[in-house]
Structures are given as structure tokens and as C-alpha cells.
Picture (cartoon, rainbow, N blue to C red):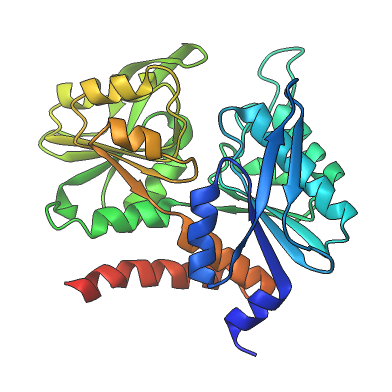
Length: 336
């Protein structure tokens, strides 16, 4: 039996309301059908999820980011998991590219909740057997799960994008971390690009507000690439962009895994001097892309497909991801 035939035989993939386009792309890569699913709401806001395919004895994969409206998308996922469990699915796997509530991963002050742990417990209690996420805000959240939890990095996709840009000299690049907490992420991208690292020193007086204070490193005459895990209101980002230009940067790019882009984010990006804003489709960006011409959206579908295939065929996850990235890197070369 061929690999795709085996996948067709064993798995059922459903898209819930936040990630339908991504799920369709994953299924195209795997050469399997996307099974029908409907998310309905009663007049009072209660949610009903109706699965349009049998899951008895199957390995089920739900593709659903828990972005805005976070609670609605989370409840859809929990209800869908429960439906599968009651319909005798063999396993229930949640592909959650953007994991909502991940920013609440510890008690920063007395009497605060650890909501990412609560969400992990809700998913397990509902019946999830495995969770697949992309670039968790804090990697230790994997430890909040008592079922397998795989956190996949998008840095390889972002790095490949810059390596394939013909109008960009890798020797001119400086990778910039927007704060001290993102230094490890910046170093990984810098190693991929063969570039040095700079760090923005900032303070955060309150949530969604940050002030850039100083720059550790040199960007004078260089192309600065800011890398972060997410951009929400873009206040921190635009503050950093201004500082980099003040410090002599020639051009400034920004890249992130999760484009949350709440409130004034798009207007702030449009009014900034940003050369390009590179983001993945962990959160659907169709609406924002239509508003902002300098946005580049990279697809995580090849990574998700590689993970699903490796899990089903009991193969090495790291090898499957490496192969998926190599294919992505060389596809452009074969076109030229």
C-alpha cells in the first residue's frame, strides 16, 4: 500500500472555523480529502459542531487556531473533540497552529491564573490524545500536557524566505530580537542566515505597551530583520522599527510566526517605514493581506502535512520536518 493510500485509509481531517484554508492546503499536500464539518451557533451563542464523516476506528485530526474570537474557537475545538470521542474515534489529534492563552504561562503577580495550563487540561479532559502547536509563546507549555505535545518552529520557513530573496545580500543582514526574552529565537534565525544579532532593550509599563530604550549591537548601514513569535497591536514593533532607523539601519524587515494584529496594528504597520512584514498563516491573514500591501504570508501547510504523515507512519518527526524544509528551499532553485 502506498503512503498516501495508507493515510487515506487511516485518517480523517476536519477544519473548524478558524483554519479552513490551511486545512485544505494540508490535505492537498497529503493527497487526502478534507472531511465535511459544520460549526453552528444557537441564538444564545451556544455552539454545535456537526461532523459530516464517520470517525469510527479512525485517527482524527482537527485543524483549528484559537485566535480571535478566542473563546468561540476554543469551544468549537473542545466540542468537536467530545463529538469524536463519543463516535469511537481511535485517536484525536489537535493541530493548533496558534495556541490561545499561551501568554498566561506563569503567575507574574499574586492571584493570577495560569490559563495556558487550564486550556491544556480542558483539551485533555475533552479527549485529545495529541496536540501539535507552532511556536508556543513559552516552550515550557508543552510540559502542561500529559499527552504528547509537539511544538513546531516556523523559523526554518522564515529563514528560507530570506535566503531565497535575490535582492537581499545575506552579508548585510543583522537579526534583531525585540527584547531580551527573544534572544534565543533571534540567534537561531541568525545562525540560519549567517548573520550577527542585535537586541532591543525595552520596558513594558503595561500589557500591549512597550517602550524601546536602547540597542545592544550595531545596525548602521545594515538590513535589520526583527524576529518575534507574535505581533499583536504592533506597538512594540513600530517602536523598534523607529529605533533601528535612528541607529542607522538601511532597511528594516519584520517577521513573526503569529500575526494576531489586533486593534490599530495594521494602521501602525502601514504608517511605519517597514520594508516588508513577513508572517505565517498560523492565523488566517486573507483580510489583513488585502489591507496591507507590504505583508508577505508564508504557509505552514508543508510543515503540518509532514508532521501528520510522520505521526501516522510512525517515522521521525525531526527527519520529516528537515525533509519538508529542504524541499521548500530547493523548489525555488528548480524554478530558476
